[in-house]
Amino acid sequence: MAKEDETEEVSLWERLDRPQAAPRASLTPQRIAEVAVDLADREGFAAVTMRRIATELGVAPMAAYRHVSGKDDLWALMVDRVSAEMEPAEQPESWRETLRAYAVRTRTMMVRHPWLAQLPMPLFALTPNRMAAAERQLASLDGQGLDVDTMMAAFRAVSSYVQGATQAEVALAQYMRDQGWESPDETRRALAPQMSYLMETGRYPTYRRYTRGAARKDDAAWQFETGLECVLDGVAGLVERGRT
Image 1: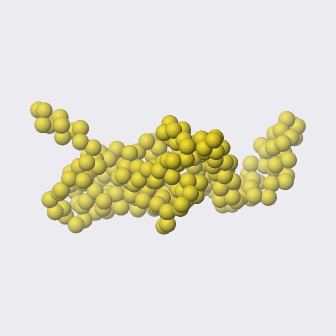
Image 2 (image 1 turned 45 degrees about the horizontal axis):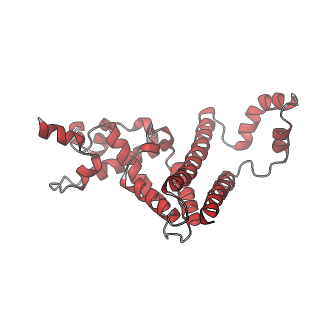
């Protein structure tokens, strides 16, 4: 019984790091993750089931369960696979460029794989590729005069901005698709009655000025990167104080 309990406590990643007997070429955790990600990209997160994955791989559903014990493992493998896309081709030299590079690539990853916004646990998934990305960002802040708690708070501030801003962007795109709106102009026309009424109440003069004068309403990349610079300026203030 003790041996059985010990086996249950072994993490997915420890199991994968252990030497394995030669598996069938079509059935490995990595291949299962590849098929699951492809399914989610093509048909949405709801299409990803162990039965559907087994069908795509040409195996019995129970065969897949020998490699992936359940949905939590499957989600973790999917997150880890796409998280490799966060890694910049070249590692930046400064802490600011490191955090910025990972932020921009994380947005690109999430827009490419919108199902990430539907996962119950993407922010908390402990996977090798996510940990590697976190390690590089934290290491870039190390030696900048910050204690370890402040380093982590700064890293999480940037990560939270990226997740929140990109999830909002993905959710808006999904809402537009659900409504059948094919462009930002069509979206604004559909929402015009509500917006016009609210603006005409006179209660929101600054927002009204924005709606009439904004030149980058539809430039999601500019909006994201400008907000990111605001967050990085805040981190820069912490670094500056830490050095004095």
